[in-house]
Each structure stands twice: as structure tokens, then as C-alpha cells.
Length: 126
Image 1: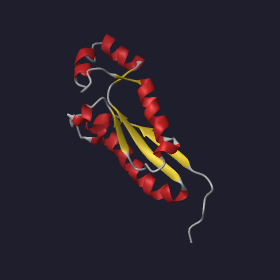
Image 2: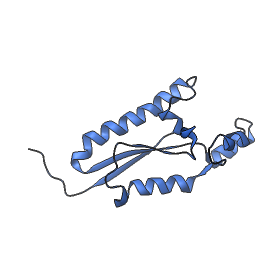
Image 3: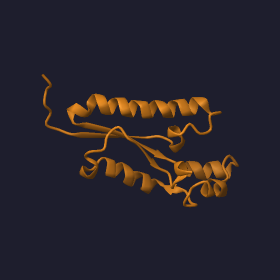
């Protein structure tokens, strides 16, 4: 007999967009952890779904943040190249990622669980 629960919960992990595609395999440890988060997302969705818990991951591409600005300033990232690497020729914003997380946690996404949602300006579509 399964216990019943009178609540629902939503969990959203945020991980990098390339984690779902296996891009840049030379960065094995980085990508292994990203794949681990996606595996955890799927396993947790299956395990906790019967208890009313939805679990999803958001997979952004390069997002315009202070960390990215610092990488550009240090010469570790070419902003122009990063922007043209997106299908829509710009970097995403933290607000856009937050909106995706809010949607996943909303009643509008009530039937969405176990998903790794790319929020990447079309990066993974290429």
C-alpha cells in the first residue's frame, strides 16, 4: 500500500547546456558531473513522482553574468564568439533562466518531470 501525500513539491537543478550533448569531451570531469545531475534528475523524478514531487533540470548555455564578464576581461572567453555560437546571436540572461525555473515550478508545468530543459538560445539545436 502506498501512502498518500497532501502536498506537491518541485525541484529544479541548473546545469550547463552541453551536458546533454556530450560536447567538448576533453573536459571529461566537468561533463561527467553535468551528466550526473541529469541522471539524478531522471532518477529522482521516478523515485519521488509518486509522492507528488516533480524534479527537472534547466540546462543553460553561456549566460551573461559577472562571472562571464570576468572571464572575458581575463581573456578566457571571447564574448563575440560565444554570442555567435548561439542560434540567436546573443548570450542569455540570468532573468531568462529564472523564468524557466519559475515555469517549471508553476502549475503550468504540472505534468513535466524528469526533463533536462535546454534554455540555450538554440545552442543544442545546431
